[in-house]
Image 1 (tube, rainbow, N blue to C red):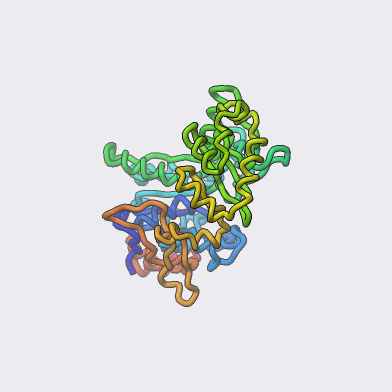
Image 2: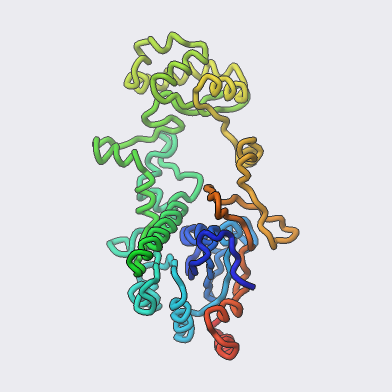
Length: 397
């Protein structure tokens, strides 16, 4: 069996995946889905990823993170395992890891060691808080980064206390930024001929994702408060109750604010001194929202979505996850695909969120079982049958 090729876009690159849990596998998934030859390396005695994620290896979480990869086991704590890994590094393009910073040095698989073996290697590290500094040795966890990075202080309703986001956003963005860093380093390597060390962390990624909220502090010394469902700076924007549920309405700027006032039959609001300027609409936000909601309660969500969009006012329903996939636009985008090789389990997952016209991405292989491709992969990296037999006998792989 040759490497599964989800796309031809990255098929010339070989990636050694040492990552665990979520942030690291998210980064590698980006590469695998675009055709990189990904080798997932797992230690035979480690706590399996599925236990770390709180579910079965065949459960949705693990399946979502590890499609389009092959896997082998290797004991990096043994000298033979380390030497085996070094031989693989000689032929690889990328190594991705999310050990705590001190662990990789202790194992002898740090960047400085591996670059001596292969100067072209792109070595990517994801940590909780950075590779050095006062928090470097702390274990990283998504919710800790959400809190430390300020996100929880601006999430949730005012006066209700800090609130985590409903997805592990620090993990996921760290993984995406790591993948972006890897691709950037690979592009630069085409010029310099040398690899380099890509570093990111949950904390760095979380703070970067604060975006305009950080600018409010850094430029204006304004500490952003919790705003609940209201947009912090664009008013009126938020969640409004209808006769059968809720809708989002976003009245950005004067023109759209006028369209909204007219669409809900309240044109007099535009000239009302309490709401005539962005500053006054912000000051009187609660009263304005109450006026709008008194009107939106008179019709269904579907009716308001049609009325307001027809009037040129951004508006949309608020779906539960099951309803997301019933939405006609989501169906049109064809975001869901069945993973081949999963038999009667009918594993369907969300595809990549961007498309390429000539080299599309697809699912070509299910997440591998532990050590499923060990022999096959070692052969591809140049190990003989006798060498593989010895490695197995010594419990190195």
